[in-house]
Amino acid sequence: MTTDFAATKAFFDLPQGVTYLDGNSLGPLPRAAAARVAATITDEWGQMLIGGWNKAGWMDQPSKVGDRIARLIGAAAGTVVMGDTLSVKVYQALASALDLNPTRRIILSDTGNFPSDLYMAQGLCRMLCQGYELKTVAPEDVLDAIDDTIAVTMITEVDYRTGRKHDMAAITARAHAAGALTIWDLAHTAGALPVDLAGTGADFAVGCTYKYLNSGPGGPAFIYVAPHLANKVNPALSGWLGHDAPFAFDPDYRPGPGIERMRVGTPPVLQLAALEAALDIWDQVDMADLRAASLRLTDQFIAEVEASCPTLALVTPREQSMRGSQVSFSHPQGYAIMQALIAHRVIGDFRAPDILRFGFTPLFTDAADVTRAAETLARIMADKLWDNPVYMTRAKVT
Image (cartoon, rainbow, N blue to C red; front, side, top):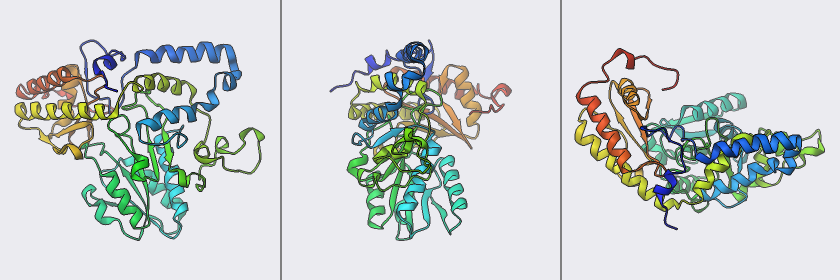
């Protein structure tokens, strides 16, 4: 399959005149999503009422959609399930991994990990109160820090600030050799580049769907458990839909088969409907084509910005194998610069303390978008258009 990215771009409802380079934070609206959600509301909820759980297949959505996500992350059918938020899924994976490796007490992560992942680990360690601890090292030191004291590694494959990509295969192999389990956060990976969870032997993986997968704000998260562990996992969040027979209303928890036991609460039916519409686009995408296009776009942006904006410092790796699908530059006035860019209809985002972050999604981003963004940024820097009080005031979301 050869992917036609001009065709996929037409499937998105992008505002006229806007260059959108923030799909790594929130993907744009797929044109089919509104109609799909409306039909779920009117034809299913409206007409079927509670019967929609059976007639419309709402109860099976988390597994069916999980199988569609599985193709994009190198996982087998029946190993991925949807539901809840990414932080909840991180907690589930961590608690399960620690339970499977009971003689060890250390969670290894890196200082570039997304803070929410670290917060969940810190909270779990406090709750367990048995000498559990979170150890963090610099991203480049993760491999060397893996030894026989580590219970589980918890790594986000692509750094949310810099776009630096960890080597999943190498870290997983080192962890397994040391007797540790692995958890991979794919928040900035799923839909951004090829992943091979099965091939690398990853134990757990989690991810969100509202970024590159375009499910909309608050879209559900997913969790993957390797097949050889799926029936050994004892879920810490033993919700009723992870029970072996939810509608038997047994007062005692009995885990369901395989990945089904990682379900917790009621499926977010409307969000899953939006995600299904988005995944229809992904059915037309070859992940190798996506990666090649992403690298072309990020290379182009780096070259054009560096040629015209000498005061911006690249913080994303130049080496393609170490880069996700984003480019980040730093500048002491990064927030104001980004606000000026947004005012000129080029949308990226800012991450403290000084990072301008740009996501590249070949499904709707092309070379012309890259050039327009770079030219707009160059004009803002050359004319110091960012030096305006209106661009200095911090909003709640940056």
